[in-house]
Length: 253
Image 1 (cartoon, helix red, strand yellow):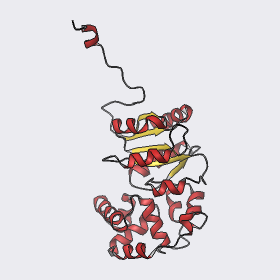
Image 2: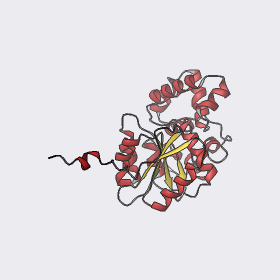
Image 3: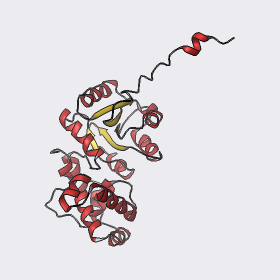
Image 4: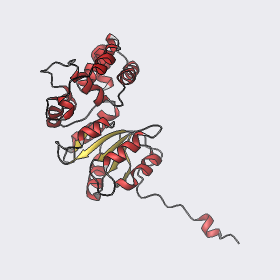
């Protein structure tokens, strides 16, 4: 005999999943091993216009949750005891439609940042980022921009890390040579930290056209993130030394 009470019992919602079907803002998931950090970020972002926190979790549950709620942006702790953020990042990059991922860290000189950028992270945020800047950083990530603390950007680009010390290889130079003149223009502006909309305004292109150029740039340079493309541009000498590069995307948006 079928237990009708069991059949008709309501399905309890997953406590990790937030929001409702009628909401349509930027969908964000927060992954951190500390409940206090998750709660704090959720409260800050939920209070911001146009942002919906659709899920939070620790590292061990992250891939399953993100595959379920399909956020646009993931804020991911780079160091977690159950599973490190780099492992989660690599798994997320393997999803059919991977979200944009920014790493969360306590120190802006974290030794894992270079590895995270190589693995496809779109930048990183300090956990003590100001609330207004946190929300704006999410908007920047969603718009295709890069977020990075100014100090770490300088460190990356001016010689204190492996990536900063490297000159462009012959292969990278050859790949840059395959870019059209317009794609080079977009690459330089991308490396300055501009979003797709800002690039379009600067050189009078539609956002859709800029997206197409960015996609072509990533394909031709054989990189999987805007940060990696920007670093190739920097190593190849495409950026002016006095320009500040990534710093434009860090604290003033």
